Length: 526
Picture 1 (tube, rainbow, N blue to C red):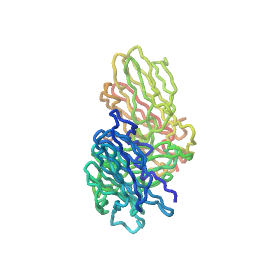
Picture 2: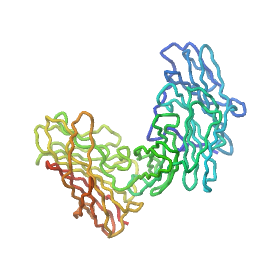
Picture 3: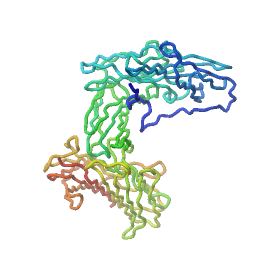
Picture 4: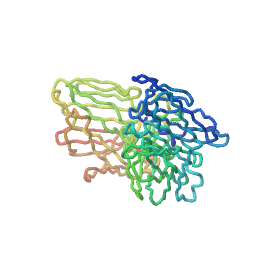
């Protein structure tokens, strides 16, 4: 059987690189001593592994093949490895272990998998869980950094095939994530100082929290959504970023994961038909208590501009063309690449026009010099843009436009007093479709965020919000009835018999500044 490392049990994944240890062939200090680490398998024979050697307390890290001697400055080190032994009819076995070594002269040590103890976990599992849990575990250097997982070795396997060599040193941490799979998933994490003599633990479903994943279809650049949960303890330890795969499937779908209380990072990766990871991101962290249940959504309509506003600084109006079409449930990390045309004008005079893309060049920025105070207009016309893949037929939120009208003074640095709109249609199905000839209530909010510590950010209050809908791709527009409730507005949109609905908002303030936002193919009819 070919052993494959899945998304669920690799500590580092596509979207979130951990802080990596830096391999070094030599130290600035003369290497006056040496170390050789022999690794033995569970039957006593030598097994070739890669050994990680970490200096204490500096954290300088070396990588060496087992049995090979490496020159080191005299001092204290942690030598750790995963002793993996393959099998013809299964995943083989993993034994992870570490030793604290005082290196002086020629030093030799052995990491012996025969001393490993099985990592045993138990859960009062429901009848639909029939297979043993899959466990991902790692040993970390706890004394060299406030991020122990950055100096670690890891292994993963089914229960009964994963072992850890006990070591009581407080310079080490041991962390694991266990996952049981049935109709739902059950996930438990645990961290200890040192490697216990009996690694593992016992867990009860009644003491777990629940996170439900709701993955909608139609809004993403591709249909395959790989959702996962990563452990994110408030104080980093040896469980940080250990990951449980939730589901890897075409949207739409739902899934439930029952987890030990604590802080978790939900995430998704979106894969195109050619295998490219083309999107996804990290929503806000969720801190869960026993018995608590929360829902994490991905792909809800409408995807729209998420954060960046025009800025007036250094006698110029500037704009960062990032996060113009993104999943509001994820945030700026969940925005797709776009190509956009940005135009700054004053009255009938075009000051600057530029076409930009954040695909392959995240440093692109629009900037145009202004010479006098007055009212300026900045427009942005953004389309999703990802060369090399074919977008799904009927993809929603394919285009978004912004039309901002505001007062600017070249002598005053500030964030422009304009808004971004969040549209949230209610009552859509899992494909982000409304029923034909129905009425959809769209929750509308007008927001703005600080763009950096060096720019003045003033509070601006929306005086009025108007909303329109279009059933013919923006050729004609129909005003929606809008009701104001607290800090949000509700628009009643009358849906056509088929096709898709575009949404447009206009937000004005008491000073006459105006923000118009349009999302084409905001949601579908079906």
